[in-house]
Length: 173
Length: 348
Image 1 (tube, each protein chain N blue to C red):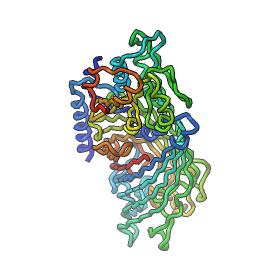
Image 2 (image 1 turned 180 degrees about the vertical axis):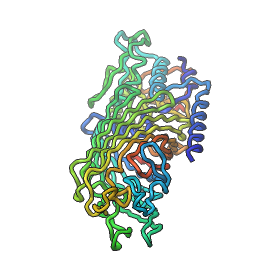
Image 3 (image 1 turned 45 degrees about the vertical axis):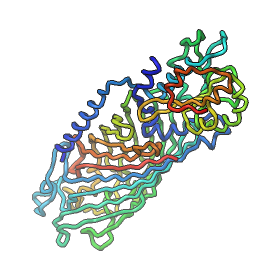
Image 4 (image 1 turned 180 degrees about the horizontal axis):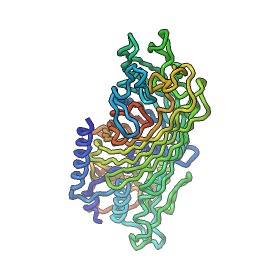
């Protein structure tokens, strides 16, 4: 009995080790999400400013931790700042706001006000995306993907690169 | 990293998919008081565990049943042999556990076990050459409060404080070689400890790529003595484990588990004890309080299975089986042969 047990243990450990050889770059989901949002922001045209470029995360400390990898980098000639938003108000000084699924109601309440501002809204939840957020970042199988609500982007006055749209999983008009 | 590189990269799921974290992190959503109810989540799990004991050990030495059974000759009686010898003991526990995520870091839980035990015997008592006794019913209900702490993005700590209530019977009776049909069964066949037990625990878990790993320390500290004037030994357990996500839904694991437990303090006066036999007043090893306690180390392999479609978030089936590779028992004492468990965890 014990001989078979340790044989099984050996086989399972061997299988686990072999599965590591994949050849593709491996990224943890939250960090991948942060990097993709950062890349999407680079493909937008932003009104000129000298203030920090602010990514605000609405009450999502886990994803906010992942955003540390881009904090203090530069984009659009501006230093990146990560803002953890825990209070019930809209961070109007942000360039990007990331809205988690549990903040759907807050987004619906703030949607009209946000749509008038040059702020890119991003979510990882399809229900929040359906409610009018501009970008959905998703994992399909084991790859990152994103969808764009172009109508919402246009309404805010932001401009999005055609090169970025070519990589999108879905573009809504 | 270019956008193309990023979109082609292999994404490994968040460390928050790991079992304990998954349950707890469901509540890590909101600091807004208006979201209090939204952040609260219920968790439910059910598990079945079976442990089989077959054979005896004294210290680290294996003993045969013939070594442990006294043959009836007064000249061969020692304090290490007995007229009645349990041979194969099987313990089964079906546990129902519910958890409620109270806030970002705090979870309350309640565990209700249903126990079934059976023990086969051989003896030199006429009419009881071979006999089996069975006990089953509610075990000791446990309530616990857990505190979750994220050390950093990949490392987490869970502190837990539980109290086990003496809801399991310590009055189980059966037909044994003692006079009459309803005799008090040995300590091993009782369903509870009979005492309020304090159960502190510390769990550490971390992740790196597709690996998750951790270490646990669990204590069961008995308080006072039960109504039958004895106290089971304290139990000290530690584990190290690692799991690898081969796919989104298939995760094998390995675990090393160390257990140390103390002997029984006191004695149940209803169990047979023959003062007229000064060499060994106990008719079986399982009624001798000194023949409890010891240390053992187990190696276990496991498998976690999730919904391959990914629709049942934070729901998984887990299987684990293992066997001791080291035992040092205050013997003669029945030794563990193997154990198996299956659990289903649901969060909603």
